[in-house]
Length: 115
Image (cartoon, rainbow, N blue to C red; front, side, top):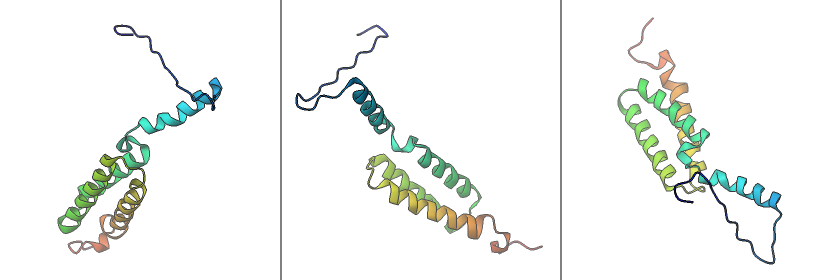
């Protein structure tokens, strides 16, 4: 209804597959998750925040490498293809894990570090 705060919902059902109101409501709730852009999903937002945090402390080639990995992941998210996102997320997670483990937080790794 233009100009009002009322909302209407029309559900079209097949004559041979009638669903109860409860079934319709359950299905609509299931489908609601599809409306969320992948970049807004918690797992993806958390991973990107973690990658950005690691990026901030990196230098040189590692920093550029991580920037490229972040960009690739963001490009996959923009495609909104649910088949591509999990492997892309796993790849970026693996990269961030490795950088955290072997460079970012390990002072022994830093050639300029001395005790």
